[in-house]
Amino acid sequence: MYDYQSRVEELDIQAFQTDLIQWFAEKHRDLPWRQDPTPYHVWVSEIMLQQTRVDTVIPYYQRFMEKFPTPDALAKADEQDVLKVWEGLGYYSRARNLQTAVQEVVEGYNGKVPDDPKKLGDLKGVGPYTKGAILSIAYQQPEPAVDGNVMRVISRILRVEEDIAKQKTRKLVEGIIRDIISREDPSSFNQGLMELGALVCKPKNPVCHECPLQAHCQAYKHDLQETLPIKSSKKKQTRKPYAVLIIRNEKGEILVQKRPEKGLLANLWQFPMVSLDEVDFPALIQWFQNEYGLQLELDQKVMNIKHVFSHLVWQLDVYAATVKDGTLTEDKGVFLDYGDLIKLPFPVSHQKMLPYI
Image (cartoon, rainbow, N blue to C red; front, side, top):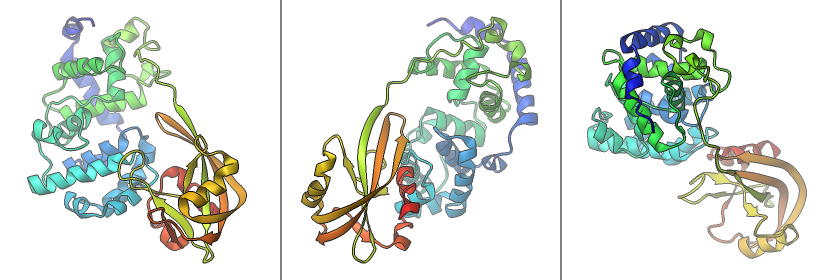
């Protein structure tokens, strides 16, 4: 890894800060969490924005704040209510970790989000980026908040020719930010870098002619803006085929089940899923009778759904089915009418099935 210090020393840091902060003041988007950037508001917004586009987050953030306007309200809420408001946003462990951490804040800090880096970083789900965002934006502390946008901008500005997917490169960029961050306005500085990465210094086709930092940019100077940053390719996603059964009993109620407390989509609700890697389709009805205690009549295929996670792809073949006989095995789920069913939090893949009930 190269010694970046000489490139930092060559940078006119005062002019860099001024150009970035003035641009942010003029060009920043009017986002709801920026209207009143309390520590709680910043925290919730940054957790929602992980792996999720801004336009998607806005209505979720607004609904979340209507339902849980204070740390105390979120701390006291039922987890199922939290997951229901989060429904469709994905990465549900974010919501569970957020609530757990907020409960720690209410119980241990009288509801005040800590402004101490160590105490804040010890909260569940608060990593270096979220910690830095809260401290710099809400508390005006000169702490780095390095997300993908910031990694890309700094990699181009200082020609960082290291793999940004590696932790050591993130540490390097955090060190750079500590050297160049504005002590007078760390909030606008960090948000400016994030905004610049989102609007101008894009992954592909960066809009260099609109960039306020063009004069400071080593990548632009050496015509490397399309080459940098360097990022290793992701691992290939695993594909998993499933049969999903929408099962009605004689009352017209639908069978749903709660997912385990740990693991993927923990504590969300779903329609019964059977792995077609483990059970051959012709044996599905007999397998279901053995496992669930229900004799089914399989109706038509309702739909196919492909749902992509970061590491996994679900291929879902969805079938309607009717209970002909038997008694549901204990702990295998519950039959509910549609009105009760839609009050439960479902993952996005199973929400798509609701119109076919």
